[in-house]
Length: 513
Image (cartoon, rainbow, N blue to C red; front, side, top):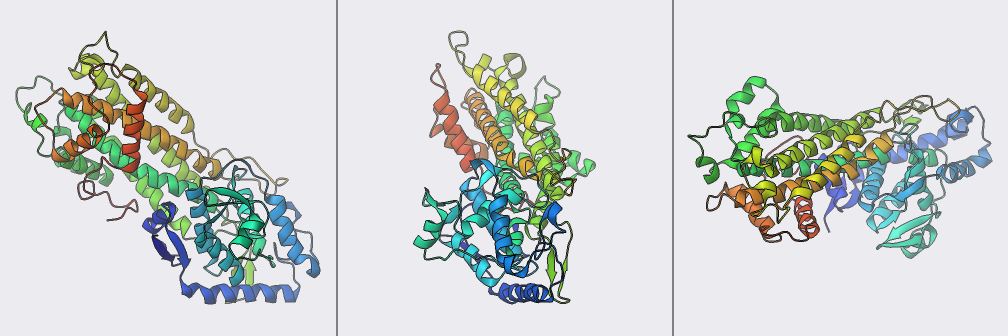
């Protein structure tokens, strides 16, 4: 199994991607000293007896309530149990594991006051495949993702359920079976586990990783659609895009040129073509996808910083022995990032659907109606375009921003919240929709190119069409279309239509070189 060592505070996006994809995780040994020092600082704070939020006080609106020394462990346990109030479907296991790894790397920076043994338990649960069952609804993205992280912490103390090898197992039994002892949380530890943006950040990172794949696939299917429509590659000329100055646009145009280089279809209509300009869905492909790429790169920077940050409260500073209360748990950066990803996903799908609509319309494409050799008797890809349109409409509704929708909580103590949690959680269903839209474009564009035989497209596009035809034959007469779409979705999900990475080199999104 792929395994990596997390250097707390300096984990790359590509490493987070590997965690999301199932890599094992361990902590760099260098974290041991700062973690132990912060835990010792908490012990000294407790010994002094002065009120410090979350260590010997109540929480939220109850912060002014002092807690007796003998009740400090109970205080942390009560916090976990009372805050494990989530509802809804469980987090997907890859996202839950990513969340736990993010929490582990945050705590390992030695600013949270947890003890080494607590950190070791969290690391061991990841290492041995114990994934807490975490309801996906219940966080407003400020004061941290309290409810989801409370369910994670509950599993650590043996409460709730854990997924082990695909089976739901009571958390206490799962720990025992793995040779682990449930945690008894000391002062500050429950709060450190609950307070943070790791739930929101995990979902946003997962969506970023998936969006990058869909972005690349949409460049391929868009280039193939250009070929099917016998469109021009002149709009991809580098000189046009250098004048605009946007690096994302320049890079998207370069990718499209590389995808179409050497095309026999394009060579066949270089001269004598009566059409002067293509529709925007072809001609403005670099401008739209370039703008999306620029946004995704900005999001990658934001989420990379967030993933390496410390976002609980209060924070322990071992050089002075202070516990400083602040607001690093407020997930506004993640909320904005999630809203941006939603817009980007919506536009990837919207542009692809417009090319699908163009190709099935003989007045625009010059191809047989709905891309069937015998229209009328056959409906061809008529309903495939309708499905794509339906998915675009769903994504447009989901793309409404979540970040402005603050609702005060905790008796107005927490009077402005980010709503990052559901802003990020909505993204993976949007990815699913985009994946299906791009898959439909793949089917339609390949079918359109088939009508140009014996002319061939470029090597990268012919490789993508060959990959499709290995699973989905050319459509002659109407057949059950759902299996064809499902097979194309699988190809897009796997990235099986993507060429050599050097053809689509788009740095800045955390992909492997």
